[in-house]
Image (cartoon, rainbow, N blue to C red; front, top):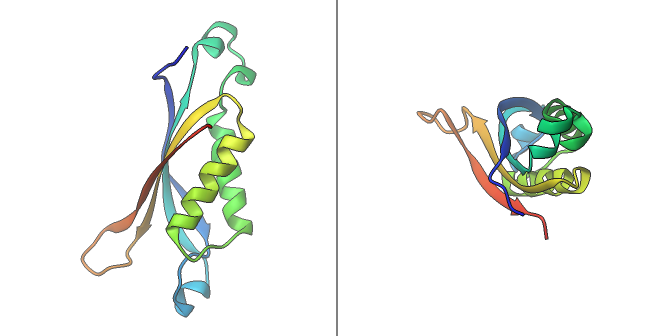
Length: 121
């Protein structure tokens, strides 16, 4: 049975080394992650157990910790890897939409970034 239920995380600040230019690789930069996690929330609504849903605080910690330890050249690689990580860690997760924003890169532009969608299977 499919569901349109979703858990979301908006503009989670993470620090990581990202970019292709030498100056970008010298120190971590702040990125903002926004996620929509497709999951059937009905079991958790009945049991009130985190075991029956996706723990959004756990998702935030997982992503922050991962990006402290890993660096990427392209936002495309980073986004794809994070979606793969989430789908592998949370079996009840049906799909992930992830937006990654990189602020203050282009003069006159608040941020730029990428949005990807990955579904299980």
